[in-house]
Image 1 (cartoon, rainbow, N blue to C red):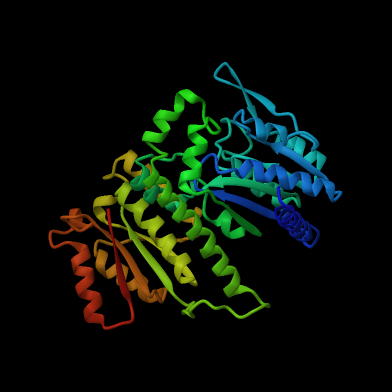
Image 2 (cartoon, helix red, strand yellow; image 1 turned 90 degrees about the vertical axis):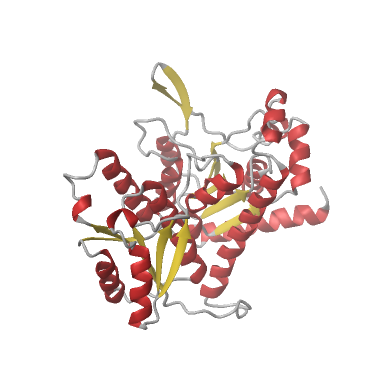
Length: 389
């Protein structure tokens, strides 16, 4: 390691230490990567050592080394919390001991695998919820996650890789973070690490190279990671109260987005995630998810599965930061126009398939087409964004 690299690492640790000392709530730092093997865990452990050398009470709360020798070597010299063993369906599973962390009350705790799903029966369903609790209780956390685990990117990642990522983290966690660091590797470097057996066992390498770790997949994931961190940095620059003026182009911050969904599960998810991304990009003042329940979607006429999907989608919208609006009306277009006016919406987000409008099942004319005509006739400043799925 060169002196410059060591100085940069020391500077990063010192900067995070100032954040820790300057806040009553815990500080959250997230290492974001494009895929497994880029070095997120290694970087977290290096920072733990640097903080430890500065006299900070650091605890390794949960670290997943995946058997990598270089990573395991970094475990030495910093207190490592034993894992808690939980029995589930006759098996003993090792989990992070949240109670033990809170009892020790370290200044900083390292928590790997942010998107991990906890064993059923745990205090929280997801590890990111454990992290939220630690931060709220005044314990600073350094954690790591790959870009494909971000909730609003699920549909894009599915199209890129063909992989349905089931463990996901709400984007608001990144927005709440005090610092997000992109751990970057070129596609060639990452594939070389994979081929050398530094990421997975040798038996898994050919399958990984032919599937998720295809060069084009990694390139697009890398772009997503870089864009995500750049967008977060842009928001920080725009909202900063001091320092140099923003060099980003000015834009209005009074945008209000209204996403229109029905009980179509897949379409609703894509509309919600897309609207979340748009709201972030525009720096919107607020965004809403509107569900118009017609007589055909009353509780006694819609299946339990559809009701469950609808509730899950509304929960997803809440996790991504939306305000939920539910109205009963057989006039879908009229209800949308009325709610848009009440909320001073500037952009409607609706879905369409390749052949029929999303709402075709409710109206022979097609609700999306009717909505387009009605908004055009209103001659307001309301725009419409169509999401294809």
